[in-house]
Length: 277
Ligand SMILES: NC(=O)c1ccc[n+]([C@@H]2O[C@H](COP(=O)([O-])OP(=O)(O)OC[C@H]3O[C@@H](n4cnc5c(N)ncnc54)[C@H](OP(=O)(O)O)[C@@H]3O)[C@@H](O)[C@H]2O)c1
Image (cartoon, rainbow, N blue to C red):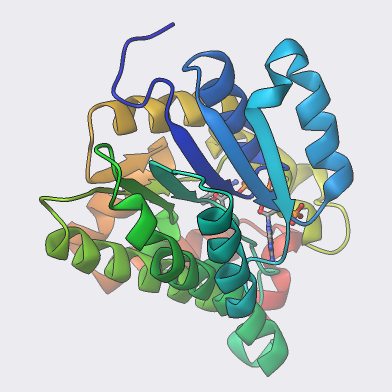
Protein backbone atom coordinates (compact mmCIF):
# COMPACT_ATOMS: atom_id res chain seq x y z
CA UNK A 1 0.00 0.00 0.00
CA UNK A 2 1.38 3.46 -0.89
CA UNK A 3 2.02 5.65 2.09
CA UNK A 4 0.13 8.88 1.73
CA UNK A 5 -2.05 11.33 3.60
CA UNK A 6 -5.34 9.96 2.30
CA UNK A 7 -4.69 6.35 3.34
CA UNK A 8 -7.64 5.02 5.39
CA UNK A 9 -9.70 8.21 4.97
CA UNK A 10 -13.45 8.43 4.38
CA UNK A 11 -14.22 9.70 0.90
CA UNK A 12 -17.53 10.84 -0.59
CA UNK A 13 -17.27 10.44 -4.36
CA UNK A 14 -19.92 11.28 -6.96
CA UNK A 15 -20.20 9.36 -10.21
CA UNK A 16 -18.86 6.15 -8.63
CA UNK A 17 -20.75 3.85 -10.97
CA UNK A 18 -18.64 4.34 -14.10
CA UNK A 19 -15.38 5.51 -15.69
CA UNK A 20 -13.04 7.70 -13.65
CA UNK A 21 -15.23 7.57 -10.51
CA UNK A 22 -15.44 3.77 -10.53
CA UNK A 23 -11.69 3.42 -11.05
CA UNK A 24 -10.89 5.96 -8.31
CA UNK A 25 -13.25 4.11 -5.93
CA UNK A 26 -11.49 0.79 -6.57
CA UNK A 27 -8.04 2.26 -6.04
CA UNK A 28 -8.91 4.27 -2.95
CA UNK A 29 -10.32 1.13 -1.35
CA UNK A 30 -7.85 -1.50 -2.57
CA UNK A 31 -4.62 0.52 -2.55
CA UNK A 32 -5.29 3.08 0.18
CA UNK A 33 -7.62 1.37 2.63
CA UNK A 34 -10.18 4.15 2.27
CA UNK A 35 -13.85 3.91 3.01
CA UNK A 36 -15.72 5.24 -0.03
CA UNK A 37 -19.29 6.48 -0.04
CA UNK A 38 -20.24 6.49 -3.70
CA UNK A 39 -23.08 8.44 -5.25
CA UNK A 40 -24.69 7.79 -8.65
CA UNK A 41 -28.10 6.82 -10.05
CA UNK A 42 -27.50 3.38 -11.55
CA UNK A 43 -27.86 0.95 -8.64
CA UNK A 44 -27.10 -2.10 -10.76
CA UNK A 45 -23.63 -0.78 -11.59
CA UNK A 46 -22.99 0.29 -8.00
CA UNK A 47 -23.93 -3.17 -6.73
CA UNK A 48 -21.69 -4.78 -9.32
CA UNK A 49 -18.82 -2.56 -8.19
CA UNK A 50 -19.45 -3.46 -4.55
CA UNK A 51 -19.40 -7.17 -5.25
CA UNK A 52 -16.27 -6.86 -7.44
CA UNK A 53 -14.45 -5.51 -4.37
CA UNK A 54 -14.70 -8.94 -2.72
CA UNK A 55 -13.74 -8.97 0.94
CA UNK A 56 -13.16 -5.20 0.76
CA UNK A 57 -16.77 -4.63 -0.36
CA UNK A 58 -17.79 -3.52 3.11
CA UNK A 59 -15.62 -0.43 2.63
CA UNK A 60 -17.94 0.71 -0.14
CA UNK A 61 -21.39 2.06 0.59
CA UNK A 62 -23.50 3.91 -1.88
CA UNK A 63 -26.44 6.27 -2.19
CA UNK A 64 -28.48 6.54 -5.35
CA UNK A 65 -29.64 10.03 -6.16
CA UNK A 66 -29.47 12.67 -8.84
CA UNK A 67 -26.62 15.02 -7.88
CA UNK A 68 -28.13 17.92 -9.83
CA UNK A 69 -31.01 18.37 -7.32
CA UNK A 70 -30.32 20.67 -4.36
CA UNK A 71 -32.81 18.93 -2.06
CA UNK A 72 -31.00 15.61 -2.57
CA UNK A 73 -27.83 17.14 -1.14
CA UNK A 74 -29.70 18.66 1.79
CA UNK A 75 -31.19 15.22 2.56
CA UNK A 76 -27.82 13.51 2.14
CA UNK A 77 -26.08 16.00 4.46
CA UNK A 78 -28.75 15.22 7.06
CA UNK A 79 -28.07 11.49 6.67
CA UNK A 80 -24.33 12.14 7.11
CA UNK A 81 -25.03 14.02 10.35
CA UNK A 82 -27.62 11.52 11.68
CA UNK A 83 -25.43 8.51 10.96
CA UNK A 84 -22.40 10.22 12.42
CA UNK A 85 -20.42 9.76 9.18
CA UNK A 86 -17.18 11.73 9.36
CA UNK A 87 -16.05 12.35 5.77
CA UNK A 88 -12.53 13.66 5.18
CA UNK A 89 -12.63 14.08 1.42
CA UNK A 90 -15.28 15.08 -1.14
CA UNK A 91 -14.56 14.23 -4.78
CA UNK A 92 -17.03 15.83 -7.17
CA UNK A 93 -16.66 13.69 -10.26
CA UNK A 94 -20.17 13.06 -11.68
CA UNK A 95 -20.66 14.73 -15.01
CA UNK A 96 -22.08 14.48 -18.51
CA UNK A 97 -20.86 15.52 -21.93
CA UNK A 98 -23.78 16.83 -24.00
CA UNK A 99 -23.76 15.97 -27.71
CA UNK A 100 -21.33 18.06 -29.73
CA UNK A 101 -23.61 20.66 -31.31
CA UNK A 102 -24.14 24.31 -32.15
CA UNK A 103 -25.48 26.44 -29.31
CA UNK A 104 -28.90 27.14 -30.85
CA UNK A 105 -29.49 23.44 -31.53
CA UNK A 106 -29.70 22.76 -27.78
CA UNK A 107 -33.02 23.19 -26.01
CA UNK A 108 -33.01 25.30 -22.86
CA UNK A 109 -33.76 22.08 -20.95
CA UNK A 110 -30.58 20.48 -22.32
CA UNK A 111 -28.54 23.56 -21.38
CA UNK A 112 -30.03 23.63 -17.86
CA UNK A 113 -29.41 19.92 -17.41
CA UNK A 114 -25.73 20.18 -18.29
CA UNK A 115 -25.21 23.18 -16.01
CA UNK A 116 -27.01 21.44 -13.16
CA UNK A 117 -25.19 18.12 -13.40
CA UNK A 118 -21.73 19.51 -14.11
CA UNK A 119 -21.74 22.71 -12.06
CA UNK A 120 -24.65 23.15 -9.65
CA UNK A 121 -24.19 19.62 -8.27
CA UNK A 122 -20.71 20.65 -7.05
CA UNK A 123 -21.98 23.96 -5.69
CA UNK A 124 -24.72 22.13 -3.75
CA UNK A 125 -22.45 19.34 -2.48
CA UNK A 126 -19.78 21.77 -1.29
CA UNK A 127 -22.39 23.94 0.37
CA UNK A 128 -24.01 20.98 2.11
CA UNK A 129 -20.90 18.97 3.05
CA UNK A 130 -18.02 21.40 3.61
CA UNK A 131 -19.15 22.22 7.18
CA UNK A 132 -18.71 18.57 8.20
CA UNK A 133 -15.61 18.02 6.05
CA UNK A 134 -13.90 21.02 7.67
CA UNK A 135 -14.08 19.16 10.99
CA UNK A 136 -11.53 16.65 9.62
CA UNK A 137 -7.77 17.12 10.06
CA UNK A 138 -7.45 16.05 6.41
CA UNK A 139 -10.30 18.19 5.04
CA UNK A 140 -10.22 18.05 1.24
CA UNK A 141 -12.37 18.77 -1.78
CA UNK A 142 -11.34 17.67 -5.27
CA UNK A 143 -13.40 18.80 -8.23
CA UNK A 144 -13.12 17.06 -11.59
CA UNK A 145 -13.53 19.72 -14.27
CA UNK A 146 -12.12 19.29 -17.78
CA UNK A 147 -9.61 20.66 -20.26
CA UNK A 148 -12.73 22.27 -21.75
CA UNK A 149 -12.56 24.70 -18.82
CA UNK A 150 -9.19 25.91 -20.12
CA UNK A 151 -9.96 26.34 -23.82
CA UNK A 152 -13.43 26.30 -25.38
CA UNK A 153 -14.00 24.43 -28.61
CA UNK A 154 -16.85 24.78 -31.08
CA UNK A 155 -19.57 22.26 -30.21
CA UNK A 156 -18.86 22.30 -26.49
CA UNK A 157 -20.43 25.60 -25.43
CA UNK A 158 -22.44 24.47 -22.42
CA UNK A 159 -19.97 21.76 -21.39
CA UNK A 160 -17.09 24.27 -21.44
CA UNK A 161 -19.20 26.85 -19.59
CA UNK A 162 -20.18 24.37 -16.87
CA UNK A 163 -16.59 23.27 -16.34
CA UNK A 164 -15.20 26.83 -16.47
CA UNK A 165 -17.77 27.80 -13.81
CA UNK A 166 -16.57 24.87 -11.69
CA UNK A 167 -12.95 25.98 -12.15
CA UNK A 168 -13.75 29.54 -11.04
CA UNK A 169 -15.72 28.34 -8.02
CA UNK A 170 -12.91 25.99 -7.00
CA UNK A 171 -10.18 28.61 -7.41
CA UNK A 172 -12.03 31.14 -5.25
CA UNK A 173 -13.04 28.70 -2.49
CA UNK A 174 -9.45 27.39 -2.35
CA UNK A 175 -8.19 30.85 -1.44
CA UNK A 176 -10.90 31.34 1.16
CA UNK A 177 -10.19 28.03 2.95
CA UNK A 178 -6.48 27.71 2.18
CA UNK A 179 -5.49 27.05 5.79
CA UNK A 180 -8.36 24.69 6.60
CA UNK A 181 -8.85 22.55 3.52
CA UNK A 182 -6.95 21.16 0.55
CA UNK A 183 -8.94 22.08 -2.56
CA UNK A 184 -7.84 20.53 -5.84
CA UNK A 185 -9.05 20.99 -9.40
CA UNK A 186 -8.50 18.32 -12.04
CA UNK A 187 -8.72 19.18 -15.74
CA UNK A 188 -8.47 15.87 -17.61
CA UNK A 189 -8.18 15.74 -21.35
CA UNK A 190 -10.05 13.07 -23.36
CA UNK A 191 -10.13 9.87 -21.32
CA UNK A 192 -11.33 6.43 -22.43
CA UNK A 193 -14.65 6.04 -20.57
CA UNK A 194 -18.35 5.73 -21.45
CA UNK A 195 -18.88 9.48 -21.40
CA UNK A 196 -19.14 9.57 -25.19
CA UNK A 197 -21.92 6.98 -25.29
CA UNK A 198 -24.65 9.64 -25.55
CA UNK A 199 -23.26 11.13 -28.75
CA UNK A 200 -26.20 9.72 -30.73
CA UNK A 201 -25.31 7.25 -33.44
CA UNK A 202 -22.26 5.14 -32.75
CA UNK A 203 -19.09 7.14 -33.27
CA UNK A 204 -17.88 6.27 -36.76
CA UNK A 205 -14.57 4.46 -37.00
CA UNK A 206 -12.70 7.55 -38.22
CA UNK A 207 -13.81 9.51 -35.15
CA UNK A 208 -13.12 6.54 -32.90
CA UNK A 209 -9.57 6.26 -34.23
CA UNK A 210 -8.97 9.98 -33.65
CA UNK A 211 -10.45 9.74 -30.14
CA UNK A 212 -8.35 6.69 -29.31
CA UNK A 213 -5.24 8.47 -30.55
CA UNK A 214 -5.65 11.53 -28.33
CA UNK A 215 -7.35 9.88 -25.33
CA UNK A 216 -5.65 8.81 -22.11
CA UNK A 217 -6.47 5.39 -20.64
CA UNK A 218 -8.82 5.66 -17.67
CA UNK A 219 -6.40 3.67 -15.57
CA UNK A 220 -3.56 6.09 -16.30
CA UNK A 221 -5.78 9.13 -15.74
CA UNK A 222 -6.74 7.85 -12.29
CA UNK A 223 -3.08 7.19 -11.48
CA UNK A 224 -2.29 10.79 -12.33
CA UNK A 225 -5.23 12.11 -10.30
CA UNK A 226 -4.25 10.11 -7.21
CA UNK A 227 -0.60 11.16 -7.55
CA UNK A 228 -1.68 14.80 -7.90
CA UNK A 229 -3.86 14.48 -4.81
CA UNK A 230 -1.00 12.84 -2.91
CA UNK A 231 1.12 15.93 -3.59
CA UNK A 232 -1.84 18.19 -2.78
CA UNK A 233 -1.57 19.87 -6.15
CA UNK A 234 -4.01 22.74 -6.63
CA UNK A 235 -4.24 22.56 -10.43
CA UNK A 236 -4.00 19.21 -12.19
CA UNK A 237 -3.99 19.29 -15.99
CA UNK A 238 -3.64 15.72 -17.27
CA UNK A 239 -3.40 14.33 -20.81
CA UNK A 240 -1.40 15.55 -23.81
CA UNK A 241 -4.48 17.19 -25.35
CA UNK A 242 -5.27 18.98 -22.07
CA UNK A 243 -1.71 20.33 -21.84
CA UNK A 244 -1.89 21.55 -25.44
CA UNK A 245 -5.19 23.32 -24.73
CA UNK A 246 -3.86 24.83 -21.51
CA UNK A 247 -0.60 26.13 -22.99
CA UNK A 248 -2.26 27.08 -26.28
CA UNK A 249 -4.88 29.13 -24.51
CA UNK A 250 -2.31 30.91 -22.33
CA UNK A 251 -0.13 31.79 -25.33
CA UNK A 252 -2.71 32.34 -28.03
CA UNK A 253 -6.04 33.02 -26.28
CA UNK A 254 -8.98 32.84 -28.66
CA UNK A 255 -6.67 31.91 -31.55
CA UNK A 256 -6.21 28.54 -29.82
CA UNK A 257 -9.99 27.96 -29.75
CA UNK A 258 -10.23 29.01 -33.39
CA UNK A 259 -7.35 26.79 -34.54
CA UNK A 260 -8.63 23.75 -32.62
CA UNK A 261 -12.15 24.24 -33.95
CA UNK A 262 -10.76 24.59 -37.49
CA UNK A 263 -8.99 21.23 -37.08
CA UNK A 264 -12.28 19.65 -35.92
CA UNK A 265 -14.05 21.07 -38.97
CA UNK A 266 -11.34 20.01 -41.41
CA UNK A 267 -11.27 16.47 -39.98
CA UNK A 268 -14.56 15.68 -41.72
CA UNK A 269 -15.52 13.55 -38.73
CA UNK A 270 -19.28 12.97 -38.70
CA UNK A 271 -19.42 13.45 -34.91
CA UNK A 272 -18.62 17.16 -35.37
CA UNK A 273 -20.72 17.65 -38.50
CA UNK A 274 -23.74 19.11 -36.64
CA UNK A 275 -21.49 21.82 -35.21
CA UNK A 276 -20.34 23.21 -38.55
CA UNK A 277 -23.50 22.89 -40.63
N1 LIG B 1 -13.86 10.99 -20.19
C1 LIG B 1 -13.38 12.15 -20.58
O1 LIG B 1 -12.87 12.29 -21.71
C2 LIG B 1 -13.38 13.33 -19.64
C3 LIG B 1 -12.58 14.44 -19.97
C4 LIG B 1 -12.59 15.54 -19.13
C5 LIG B 1 -13.36 15.55 -18.00
N2 LIG B 1 -14.13 14.47 -17.70
C6 LIG B 1 -14.98 14.54 -16.49
O2 LIG B 1 -14.72 13.43 -15.65
C7 LIG B 1 -15.90 13.13 -14.91
C8 LIG B 1 -16.18 11.64 -14.99
O3 LIG B 1 -16.47 11.32 -16.33
P1 LIG B 1 -16.27 9.86 -16.96
O4 LIG B 1 -15.50 10.06 -18.20
O5 LIG B 1 -15.81 8.92 -15.96
O6 LIG B 1 -17.78 9.58 -17.42
P2 LIG B 1 -18.76 8.33 -17.24
O7 LIG B 1 -18.02 7.06 -17.38
O8 LIG B 1 -19.90 8.61 -18.15
O9 LIG B 1 -19.23 8.48 -15.72
C9 LIG B 1 -20.04 9.55 -15.30
C10 LIG B 1 -20.51 9.29 -13.88
O10 LIG B 1 -21.32 10.40 -13.47
C11 LIG B 1 -22.54 9.90 -12.92
N3 LIG B 1 -23.62 10.85 -13.14
C12 LIG B 1 -23.94 11.49 -14.30
N4 LIG B 1 -25.03 12.25 -14.11
C13 LIG B 1 -25.40 12.07 -12.81
C14 LIG B 1 -26.48 12.59 -12.03
N5 LIG B 1 -27.37 13.45 -12.53
N6 LIG B 1 -26.58 12.20 -10.73
C15 LIG B 1 -25.70 11.31 -10.22
N7 LIG B 1 -24.65 10.81 -10.90
C16 LIG B 1 -24.52 11.18 -12.19
C17 LIG B 1 -22.78 8.58 -13.64
O11 LIG B 1 -23.57 7.72 -12.84
P3 LIG B 1 -25.08 7.24 -13.13
O12 LIG B 1 -25.27 7.24 -14.60
O13 LIG B 1 -25.13 5.90 -12.47
O14 LIG B 1 -25.91 8.25 -12.41
C18 LIG B 1 -21.37 8.04 -13.77
O15 LIG B 1 -21.02 7.34 -12.60
C19 LIG B 1 -17.00 14.01 -15.49
O16 LIG B 1 -17.22 15.12 -14.65
C20 LIG B 1 -16.45 14.45 -16.82
O17 LIG B 1 -16.97 15.70 -17.24
C21 LIG B 1 -14.16 13.36 -18.48
